[in-house]
Image 1 (cartoon, rainbow, N blue to C red):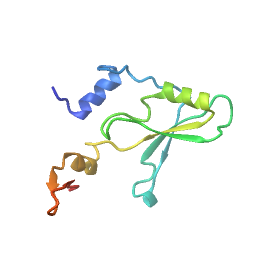
Image 2: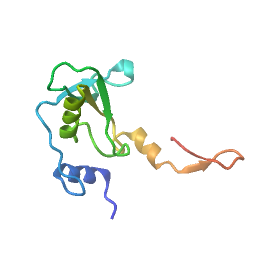
Image 3: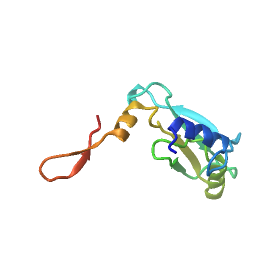
Length: 128
C-alpha cells in the first residue's frame, strides 16, 4: 500500500512506522535565512543550530537530512545533532530544504517521464 507523502510525514511525527517519533530539544536554535537576492522571500529557509556545550565552536558542519527530497526535516534528529556538536566542538547546522510535492518544481521533476533524446537512445528527464 502506497501512502501519499503528507500521510507518511504525519505518521513519522507520531512515531508510526520504522522510526521513533522525533525528540526536539530546547537547546536547538532556529534561524531563518533567504531573501530576494537568493530567489526567495525574506526568511524562507530554516537552519536549526546546535552549539557545543563546551564553549565556542571551532568550525561548522552542515547537516542535510535524508528523505529523497520528500521526507525528513531539520528538526527530526536533534539528539544526534546535539551529540555531534558536543563531541566535535563544531557548530552543527541542519538545513530544512523544500520538499516535494509541496514545492511544485520538485513535484514536476519527480513525476516527469523519461524521454528519448536524439539518435543515441539515451534517456533524459523532462523537467517540465
